[in-house]
Image 1: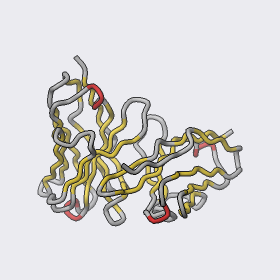
Image 2 (image 1 turned 90 degrees about the vertical axis):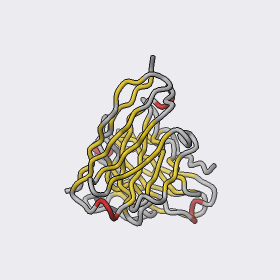
Image 3 (image 1 turned 60 degrees about the vertical axis):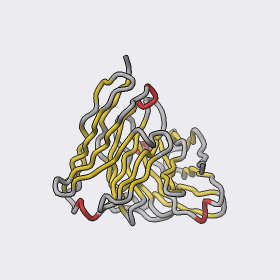
Image 4 (image 1 turned 45 degrees about the horizontal axis):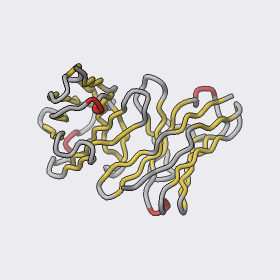
Length: 106
Length: 119
């Protein structure tokens, strides 16, 4: 079965740029989606199909995908960005999530 | 405004059954695929099932295949998950999620309903 690997945690200073990676075998050939989840809340889609933002998501959120790594980039990080982030793909009619990354804004 | 309201969770004994529901509003339910995603306490997200807009195509995670069944009633704007032969490891918050942007991303989520499997 297909696996996605994310770092357990990433820290970023307030106002700086955070990058969260998602590794998978030839993930660049798949559409990658990213979700933000704050404690006690349902997840929210922040990036779909590698690099597209749903309406209402700030331009500070962007994505890229190539080779074996997809990346979620959060520019000018704010305290409100502190959350768990999950990448997701579809493989062989199965939804697959990464293990999640806890983003801490210092 | 798109709304998904999950219900039906509760405490059930191992081996028991439960039926979850998701009431949808604010969009044309019959035109979009739907999914169930769960999250065990303190753990990450796990996709468990997909159903196409017509209800004809269904997919399941290996962890629930043969025990869980997804269905929908487009006339009632409702999604369901029938869960049988429940195990302790099925304890989780269960979310319904709309299949947006071509069907294979989860663009709107319900608030979740907690299922606890314990004796």
